[in-house]
Length: 619
Image (cartoon, rainbow, N blue to C red; front, side):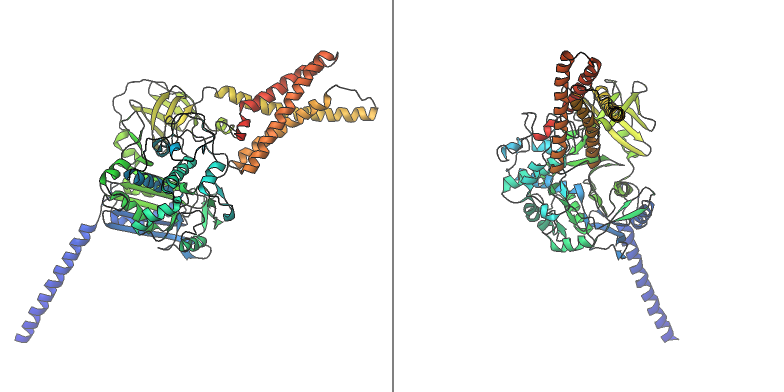
C-alpha cells in the first residue's frame, strides 16, 4: 500500500507540474493574441483571408500582417492554377506602384545626408536642358514630385515594352515618354508614373549610381531583402526572374470568373514607378522597417518623422492627404499606404506607425485592387468609422457644382479628346449637398471638406480654388478640375463627328450622281470638285484615327508620329480647300452655295484640329 501511495503522490506531482506548464502555455498564447484596430483577432486572420479571396475569385494571394515583432503570414491558392503550383513563401509578385515608395525613401536618405534639398528645383540636379516640354518657369521641387504636383498630364507614349531587348536606360526612357506640362507646379495633384520616375533619375544624377543599384545597396541589402528585384527585366536577381517566370496572371472576366492571362510579363522602362518584384516576406521586412525608428533605412529618427509628416492636405493645412509620397488613407484609423497594379498583379502596403502595425498584400490578379483594399480594411477598419467623416462646423463658402475632369488625363496633344470623355458632373441639391448622377452623393462635412459616397465606398474630398485652374476637388492623388469650356469643346467634337457622317453621305451621293452621268454621258464640271471631295474623305478618316488612338490609350512613338502627321495632313487639306473655295467663290458664277458650305465645313475642320492642339506632339 505504501508503494502504491508513493506512486500516487508522484503521479499527482507530475500532473500538477504538467498542469502548470499547460496553464503557462495558455497564458502565453492568450497574451500573444492580438486585436487589430478593426476588432479582428490574430487567430481570425487566416479564415478572413480565405473568405475574402473566395468572395473576390482570387486565384493566388499572399498576406502578411505584423504588430510589433509578431508576424502572421497567409498564403492562398495557386501561383499557377493550370499546373497546380501552390502559392508559398517562394512565390513572387509584382509590386506595381508600391515600388514608388522606394523612390521616396531613397530621396529622404539623400535629404538626411544633405545631398538633396526637397525644396530646390530638381532641374538643378538634372542634365542641362533635360526637360523639354515645360509650360511654366515655376520651380519643380522634390516635394512637388512626392505630391504628384509637377504639373504633367498623363504620358502619351507607353512606359512599358513586351520585348526586354527594347528596355531603355532610365534617362532615355524619360525623354522618350516626356508628357506635356499643363498645370503650374504645386497647384494640381495628377498622379504621375513619369514624375515619380523622374525623381528616381534625380537620385541617379546625385549619386552617380543607377537607381536600381542605389536601392540594392541602401534599402534591399540593409533589410536582408534577398528575394526582391528592382530592374525591369529582373536580371538584378536571377532567382526572382526564375520565380516570376513560373507565376501566372489572372483577371476577372465579364462573367465574374477568373481567367488566365498566362505569364503576362512586361518590362517597365520607367521602372522606379512600378518594377519591384519579390516575395511577401521581403515586402513585410520593408513595411516593418517603415514603422521601426531604429531600422537601418535612416540614421536619425527625425528623418522618419519628416518622411511621415504631411506634405499635402485636403483643406489648406488641416487634414493630411500625402506624406512625402505615401498616401494618408482614412480607414477605421488613419493609415499610411500605397497601392499598386500592373498588367499581371495587384498589391497594397499599409502601416500605422503609432501601434507599429502593418499589412502587405500581393496577388496575381490584374486589376484586383478591391481584394487588396478589403484585406487592408480587415486589419484597420472601415472608412465609414473614421472620425474625419463626422460632421463638424460648416460655413458654406463655395458652390462646387459644375463639370470636372480628372487631372490624370490628357489636356494637350493627340489624345486631348480623352478629357472630353472622362467628365464628372456635379449637381447641387442644397447649400451643402450635391449629387453625381443617381449613385453618388457629395455632402459637406466641414469647412472645405466633403464626403463622397458611392454605395459602400467613401472618399474624403477637399475643395480648393486656383486662379490659373479654377475650382479643384482634391481626391487622393488625382484631383478633379473644373472644365469651364467643356460644353464648347464637347459641341465641337459632336459637330466634327456629324460633319464626318455627312461627308460620307455626300460622297455616296456624289458616287451615284457620277455613275448616272457617266451612263448618260452628261458629265458636269465643278471647279475644285476633286479637292472638296478629298477634304470630305479626310473627315471620316480623321475621326477614325481619333477612335484608334482612344482604343490604343498609350501607344508607341511610331504610332504617335503616324497619327500626328495624318491629322496635320488632313488639316492642310482643309486649309487649302478653304483657300481655293474662296477663290472659286468670287471667280465662278455657279455653285456659290457649294463653295460657301465648303468654306464653312473645312474652316471648322481646321479649327477642330487646332483646338485639340495636335501639333504639340512635335514638341
